[in-house]
Image (cartoon, rainbow, N blue to C red; front, side):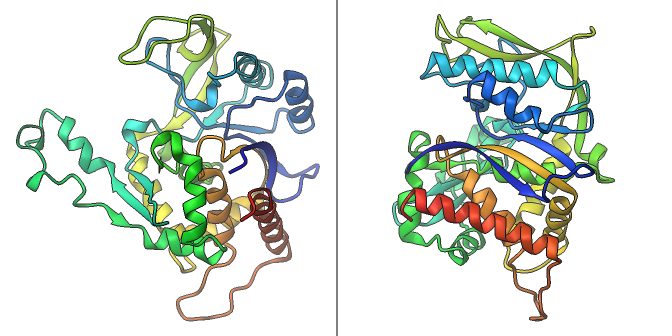
Amino acid sequence: MNPSYQWVNLGSESSFNQQEIIDIMGAPISSPEEFEEYIGRFINGSKIICLSGELKRCGEGRPASNYRLEHDETLNENVIKNYFHLCSNITKKPIIVTTIPREMRNYSWFLTEKGEIIRKDQVYRRRANDPEDPIQYTGFPGGDETIHDIVDENFMNMLYKFGIDSDKLKIIRESCKNSRYHSYMIDMISFIYQTMINTSKFHKIFQAEYKTISCVLGGEKVNKWTPKENMNYLYFEDCHDEYGCVYFVPRKESITEIYHLFDLIINPYENKAKESVRLHLDKFSIHRWSDFDANDTDDIFTIIMILHCYSCDTIDNEQFSLTKKQYDIKKNLESIIDSWKRRNSL
């Protein structure tokens, strides 16, 4: 696979009256000059900034992967400077964080050598770490932690529909090699959180935190992770002064609902969840910074998931119709996927 960091535009075309989202879904490695020039075209007081990465404080461990690039000090400095610009200099409007910590994620997915996708139940596995759960003392029944894992047929069928079959999945899985061919598909989950913006559910899904962005050189060992001595790391500290910013982060109580919406969105049929995705892209022009195949395969799977909402079947086989705007959005999504396929010879 050929990794690519790039901006992609989703949803409605930019216009003077169009609501816009700056969606940072990968480490922004471009030079600060390029980054500031690009977002300067869109950022003003009415724009919404979305970040995907847990807001860790110093001492809580390695920052989320979207906030660092440890194998390259120069690019890591770009990432830090770009986040400081985004979170300190751009707007005093609240910033929306659309991801959840790893220890709160319900599932992970394993891409097998055969080109299958296995959904692994992480909620069940975490019972082994709960001191109030008998499983911590007795172990899993029959010693089998995989009892609730499934072949994710809806997921695979959605990919097949857009030309990603088992043979191609055998190639694509190499994007996840560093995580032993596993993915939390968190970009897909993050996008569903994003669709809650400007809805009546927003404050049920998100809660406010007041933090300031900070940079720490090196640091003390945290559990098994030892920070590199000469590497800067990005953190978000609690604060109470004028230098802070409001960040809306997902409530723990929202997780079950979001994963339920995920299941509705990837299933074959038209439903209210897919309609809400289309309405979100009708409403917003989204400028998304993506790291296709750099660490994972969830970026392109997110684009396919969105396109699926414009291409699904109806249960009663009625004609599925799109507005002119929605048709244009669909064609743009197809173009992004076709470009990705050509880049990777798929």
